[in-house]
Length: 415
Image (tube, rainbow, N blue to C red):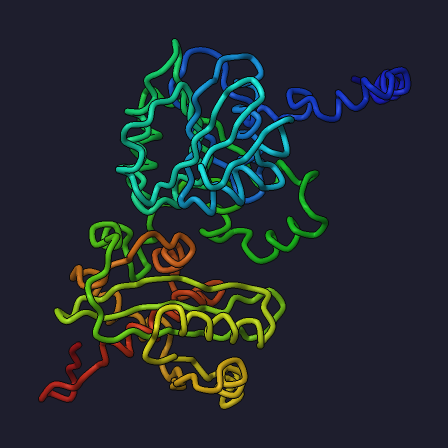
């Protein structure tokens, strides 16, 4: 409407009509957030961070239940905790967009007054989806799943109720084979939205900060523009190496360490914290990426101390280039008995990382689950741009587990 006509319209509606309009999703939804028209089996919504993917998925489910089209629904995320925190209880989750719902965490289900039931599932255990059957399902952050193809296959086999069972997949894209197969599937209808398009619903300054830090980078194109970015040919790692060696259950470990790359400042810089171990057969396992940004020194040190206790680690390997002995002091303040070994970077990041990348190429390092942010840094960093804190922490941990040793020829080094 023209501005004058819009003002006249809004001035003439009642309070009840205004309340209705404020909650009427079709009025506010952008085109990519609306379920596609026509005949489709799978709706794939690729969106940047904060682009409104979760709201789109939740509203699609809520509308389907209101219209009586959905009675038995599957909700699946990377973990049960993710499903609860984002899809159900999140600011844009089901409890926020639909009225009268009852969430039963102990039973892993959401109940509607109409009798509709949504069952909460985890992609960590694809076989747990067997036996379920749905007339609709919503899969969130598909590219974050540990076993995306296996879990998707089980979910599609469960969509066998009703006249027109459908699946909505909402995710930020990552260069994984399961997503590329999904995009190429003729049964899939694709919509796409950038972070910028949802600026009106984001915290003031968020978009400006993201643009300042990531505009023009490969990570920015993926996380903000929702582009599917292929591997960087100049990066040391390839996603195929990681995918082929990914596993669910680690072997018995003979040594376990925590690599730490402390932040240069607390102004949003990440502290890289990666947990890794080595087995008897010298296979390596990456168990957790606990990296986080915006933490105070005590905050990231406490995070490291908690990881040390949780994983019963042998040692903490921390880079000391930025803070020197202060890094040790901060860690010991959080845990007085923490065994800390400080390391100093004397060579460039890519030089230090090259031997570790070689272990991945040989199939000797296994990721236990999926670590999207870490893996993105590994497969995109080419020596330029923002420092890859998670990748640095990984390299410090694995370098400790696989120390470089000299051969008889001083010009040759081997692992």
